[in-house]
Length: 556
Image 1 (cartoon, rainbow, N blue to C red):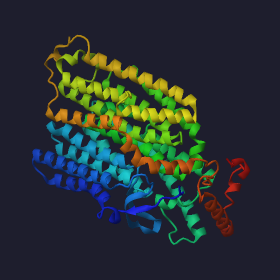
Image 2 (cartoon, rainbow, N blue to C red):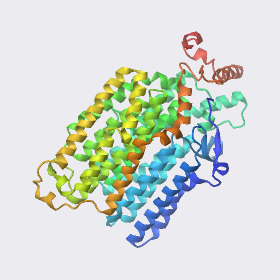
Image 3 (spheres, rainbow, N blue to C red):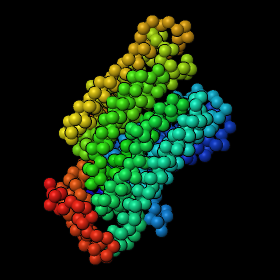
Image 4 (cartoon, rainbow, N blue to C red):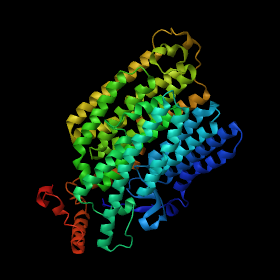
């Protein structure tokens, strides 16, 4: 496995710029939406836009080349040439399923909003389309400045979703969400700047024509000195950890979930939280392999704390949404644990669990939304015995809960099994603690189901509840199909990410000091050329001298 990535151009692979269409089609729909006077026409246009975008994204699945690490469907145009920023987008096995999840959940959120009749309907639908634009942009950008642009602009539609259509404490929750994310983003941008300055020194030493670049493809070619890796990883860590969110950077999440409207909670849990874990996989692991190895113990400890802490707090909640919010902290702890096993099983488990969590937790928030539309309360004590009154809703809710707790035959089992297998290979102690999180997860999900659906139907307000209509059933059936498909036939999902996962493990396998990897055929050559050129230029010291660990000490 080579230490750099190749590119397959969209013009050669599919014949047209499909990724740009996926990004800008919702934007075009938003422009048209702005001038429509009729509310029904607004809803129809929005549904048509996200529906076409979902069908278009399926072409990625059809034309995707499985088993390779190459960036595919690549488009690149010069943007800010003096600073080396380009409009460069591409897809690999890491981002493919996240793009499909983005377009899929966008369709479901518009369907959920179909009966919405508010004075600000136009602005509400514009926020949904804006979220789809920025989320797809984040998952396809392979230029760091372009990635940062989409990352930051995403805050705008999400802020307004919480601020305008949120609950009684929406002002506090929306502001807290933005401030926490901005703090991490500033540090992340500094890390990106250091990476491109390192590339500049490398390009000058190698006499390359491009002296500055924010392209992931270019940055992978420039070895980063070990001490500098530690600094950059620390800066990126804060940007991504706030978004995951990892403990102790998680306190904004319960407030945001509780105050956000149902569609905001679905997009937040299903996709926005994945931006953080995706950032670690996309940038931290391949660009900073030595630092990734160094930070494994710290991140693993934080991950298992999040697993147990999130599950334990979920048991204590009396608000359904807040319970699910804390469950997300626990589930994303599993994702982080899997990613930082730095082995194939763990990373594959972490990647597929990102998708699984997006599907199952979105389903739970949709169920809460159905109940809230009927009763306008999320207090667990207000319910009980609902299975007698709304049996179809109860059946789908139970199935989605089984998925969330990782029952065999569902998607959650595949992800958790791979993560725990990888964790046992890495350090059995972390895996043993994580198993406790699985048990607690089953406990709070089943206890919640029992309190909502079983027992006597005593509250008179619950005796008039209507069961799911056709639109709501379509949402639940769509999610259930994905849950079963992934749980029973995970092969297609794993096969398409296999090449990218192999690339990541090869970059980090023996990166004990720098990019010098004994399993990387060109690793030692890059390190030698890098040292010689840089010493000849007089710019920096030998990479080996940049660390107190000798070459003999770092040999496997």
